Image 1 (cartoon, rainbow, N blue to C red):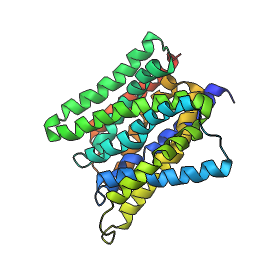
Image 2: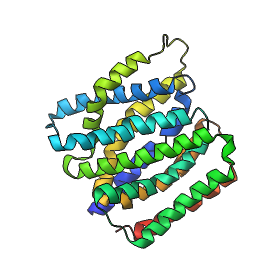
Image 3: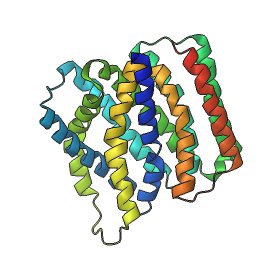
Image 4: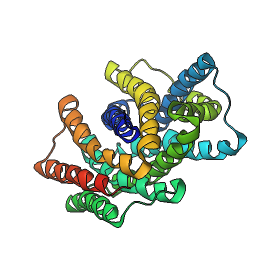
Length: 287
């Protein structure tokens, strides 16, 4: 299979997995403290990653890679999960999912800054158009609804784009699953300590849906999704494959409506469809 095609397929699998992250987080933060949820999911995924690395007898990353792995940890292990968990206390998952349409632009920008990629000018036109549609939707909702939630989501997008681009750059040499695994293992000591510190006094009142949300974000959002995502970015290009994130709102809105019975307005659907249409043009001019 052609390397670029394989990259798009791996990236698509990653996007489908990530699409369940915000709905799962929304369910979990109804009963878990957002800080505990953030560190607990990282600790659980870190323990699984450690077992995986030991089982495969993977060599340790070079010293020069440690700083980059810490950047990835800041972006996708701590920053994005914590900021989105805090945001979801103020906005619905359906509303927050639309902000994911900004991720391709953030990832592409950091792909240029950190990955050395140079998309054609027309690429930026399509990417900016998709981002403008998302921003316009947020403004049309009247940010007075929850300016705090929207600000937290925007911050989450920025740090996530950095983590995606930095991880994809490393994946070219370390491999996709190795990057996220080593990132989680480096974060593990701190995350375990914080998980114990922020652990609730009792889990007696935690219902099954909250536990299922924690399980999903720990296993799929924090580990398995990144195995496919970083491999896809490394194979097909950070800016190009990153545009697949424009599909994430579509999958996420469907999950929010189906599983959480949240209202998905016609405006949300219209913006999502328009944003998705931008991915075809962006892909054509990504290289």
